[in-house]
Length: 476
Image 1 (spheres, helix red, strand yellow):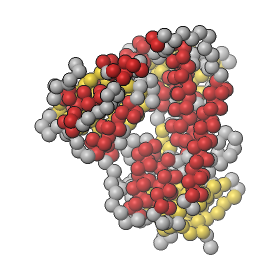
Image 2 (tube, one colour; image 1 turned 135 degrees about the vertical axis):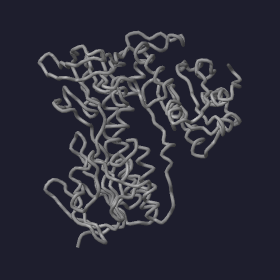
Image 3 (tube, helix red, strand yellow; image 1 turned 45 degrees about the vertical axis):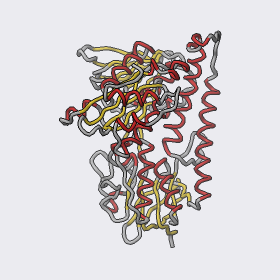
Image 4 (cartoon, one colour; image 1 turned 180 degrees about the horizontal axis):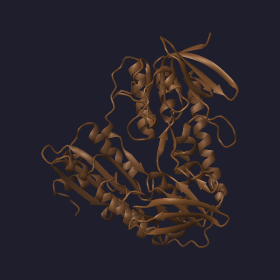
């Protein structure tokens, strides 16, 4: 007889492993299927995020930021440093050690919560009162059964037709995080989150970076004010060459490097010569090989599993979360959905307000936002009022030297409910949480303005922006 479980999760990325932990906490006999192998060929939990995504990229971002700070950012503090050098091998080793610590930590959580790790890749075999799922690890195959199955198989990098990604010369996110030397000239296709973050890493370490973006607008998902400030900082301040409205015609690999033929926004034929090329044009869901058709699981033409607001699929007791379903491809969104599903299985009544999920780009300065932008709200016909305050006159920001950026708050013109918070600053990823909390509780800009904020802190800029909504900022 196959092993039987109450809850079976396919995929141990952020959504899958968190769902497994919560299900086990609620008393369910829980198993999680994961077959990811790291560069050493060892099985590892954590999925793309922990192994080749969120965690390693932030480690390299931090290392490159430290090098740039030492090389160029300490003069104002009266600290002179000359001849600063870096060891890329040690940077990569540090990154790998952090990843290993995190993935081993998930193994500990599985043992602590008595979660069975089924090593391999899962595929639906049959449906019924119990679902039968095959777990394949090379030639080794076994079948398990479960009452509830949660699909959390994540996503993979989208590749462009005619461009062969070998993760040596032409890379996606995996190869771009593992380069053994700093390329003199780095080309990046895509000015989204991954392209900007990885481009920033290698620019700080000495690459001449050119980013080619198909869309005519820069950071179109951001509030216009944030996008304009980011453009100024990244291009004029940091030297990233970003070309918008580009159409890629051909990519050729030669002995001397890589040649990218493209048409620019004026329709002129251009050529980019680079030593390495990063392709970062979005991600696609991992639903091929899942056996969805076998059991009648509805999957869209784009590969997304169809779910309702509570992540239920068209099949009873089959759920799906994270990058394989609608909504933003964000690790924290997947985690929240994993917790929600586990609690729904237990008969509880959790709910996620998807409008209150924060977005973060870990460039320097960071960009973070929650809710809707001013232009989105105005396009909907919503009357709004806004408040904005810069970090350049904040005491703590001046003390640390992190004065670039601002906070912008968008509120309903009549009720004062906060509808969006937008931040560009070195610590935007942490500061955005006050906006998230306020919006979750349907708070107003007046609520933020009336709360005492410590002094001197960066959070005072949030308060001043809230006061500015009512045109009564105290420090400007």
